Image (cartoon, rainbow, N blue to C red):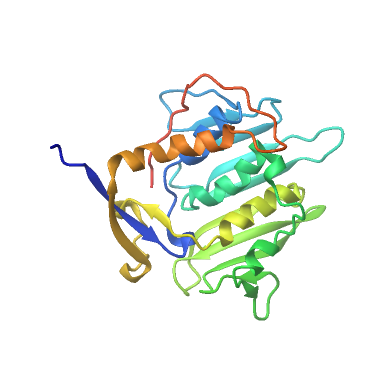
Length: 254
């Protein structure tokens, strides 16, 4: 009998410390479940995806000299202002996906999109002597940051309690509330994130991870199952037209 092939995974908790993960967790569902198109130069390590209405552009551009690797830009329309969102290299892709999934499935967004509600449900507390909320370990915070004409959302996770950021994200003040709520719901989720032990940030202590062996086939199928969930219509959600299975290029950079 052929032995099952297994791989080792580290389950990282809190999830904010897990590191970036595989960019395909974000880019492939946008392309295959959301119908976003991609254009790229095969000689450059970047991904460009545009929404079907050509109003939103996702850019992933790994650059060691640039703080923010991910960016979403939505153009102004006759009924809504422009908005943007940026994410640092080590922002877990599962947290970014909380926002991008809400772009694909707006009907799945919370009925009352209070951005703080998902965090308060998981014991986030007001920051002492400051605005916003802080996670239970005190290493991640969310605040309303001043911005021209409005106030955006600034999210910061620290390497340790030393003030050095592990990653940052910024959602502009005009980002639709259901997208902000989708992001904070993923941010506050207490479920650990699975990572290749070789690719988790050095600041993650062994005490913050649990090791396990899982079948290699389970890891390989996780993304496909995710795409299937997003393309399966819910009770009030129309089916998404299947897209050609062209996968945008990505690199496991973290």
